[in-house]
Length: 306
Image (tube, rainbow, N blue to C red; front, side, top):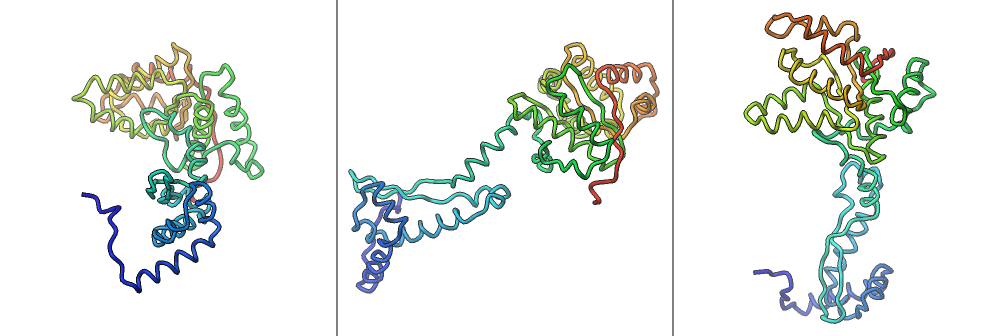
């Protein structure tokens, strides 16, 4: 049973207080606009004065929020709005959002283009236009120039390597966000997280194959932090080699970040976590990586400590 529209008998004092509130509300510009919009008579405003007062307070609070506040906490831009049906005389409530919420939702629509995993929240605002290039050195600017044209040129991939915190992942996210904003599906995959995820699918081989297939076919794949995952023959030969080989053969764009120099990858991948060594298989993987991508060393300070 709903108690929403039940009316309770008020005392004379309560009626007087309601009427005073209602009379004051009739002078409010927002209430006047509401009356014109819905052909709502004065009597309805007075009869439901407390609801209109609450509506005005919640609406004012939502409208007073800054765009930054709403981006941080979207629910702050929502409130319960009132609507009136002049035919039936029913005053009802509907969920409403301020204009900022709709604008923000449209601005963030590109994030739906990310497949397999969501883009990390810390990288959602990674966009080329947000970079302050005046503070960057020649090395950074050269790599930036290459990445800005990556979407529309005929190059298959890039391999960004360097120390931790120099901006490799951020630049990679600038690229993937640009692709996504232009309507292309992308995958931004933290390699250690991917391997842990796929391990959970050992008993669901169809789901595992579907994930690998998605990573092979996605128009842009970012493999973030390659080499940070535990090295196993399975991850090297069944996962990474499969993905790299397919993307190379089908000429799909790939961007890799790593703390390791490309020349060191064979040494890294030839010994698995059990101590078994297989240089031939490691070489096979690294040959695909170097054929697919062009290496760029990123040099600079640790931005995470700045």
